[in-house]
Length: 566
Image (cartoon, rainbow, N blue to C red; front, side, top):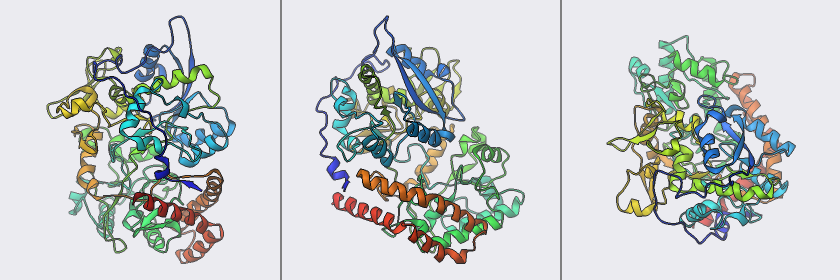
């Protein structure tokens, strides 16, 4: 019925490699550009996600302007705001009207890859094109990290999305996550890293006492939702997911949290927070703009998200710290879910793309599996590179190895603004990020070349952390994550799982029915519209809706996963 990781590893891999080292500050020796001959033209349509905070129009974005100049391709880019990405994705596939290329954070789940690729035939099978002649950089990457391609292989043995890699916590966005205002904690006379759920709650109530007009635990369902962090304190090993009925582990067993007996204790706490004004009465509707405004007003003390995105000045975000996962009477072990390093579903081609465009697109994408291409995708060129084309100043590394970015006028800028506003850095599920293949240099101890300066560099299985610059928000937050979260990283439920088409459809139907119901009823429990004494009745309702069938699939999958690991 299912095709598990161990079976996927049998996929036939490329056996070639690209040439050795070349000039590190220029794309020429890493790419197959130009791809369109002088006097000819080719237009490629693209769907790409756009950051609300940092995004720019394509004609003002270095990544797209540079891509057109060096390849000769005319990229017609449809930018999709992050907040609208899921809705737009659903509409695109429902209509069947897809662009040639989907990338840059418009990602598909394993179920969607099976449905739209295997089932509906809307995605192009890339397997025949992943060859040394067409994609030499990717083939070299696959030789070093074969499991990456396996994660992209659906049960029909085909590959509908290109692979990627991102080391754990590399974005400093690991979930469950919580940040505390250290100035407020000092004012309260309490530890800013409370360690236990009881102490965390005590801290929140002290914040409320000192700041009675604020809702001290910021965020809500639509942005910076703190609930995954709180569920984690009750023993649910879970990351932020796409559904309220996704699987989690608790005490080593597979559970759907909302159907688990302990979940009512979590609901009691959330109800208490709601009634006492710890969270906003608009918890289920509050938007990012409001959350950022509250941060700027200094009216919140705890925030589940990256504070620097809302208050980007060092003197503001440096008041905050990412705290350690919590223990409680229901959970005696601090733990944080380890996200999957190998990515999938982040770069696809439409099945209707014109045949003459296919190899051109894939030769373009292949560049981003080189050492230098991985940097261009995320961070742009280094200072002094001709590839900056006058639109950016590039980055330099300081004496401590931290990268510092500059605009075209030589002014220092936030790395996040560069990644989300100038580069293709929303493509978190695609490309050679944090994985230099340039092992000859690494083995010689050379780590200061621009193409080596990813967030992490790797020598085989040895991951060496990048030196973060605390004067920029991402670096400051990452330092906090490494100190307080990374030591508690724990393997959880394997979210990269594929099912055959029939099972995928059954699971999709169950989730589409159960998810909105759980979401609605949880809101009722939290707000008091539904009394918590009805939780057993709620569990029975879920049982009648088929949640045990869904849990059975999850449990069987996990058992097979454990068996494949032995």
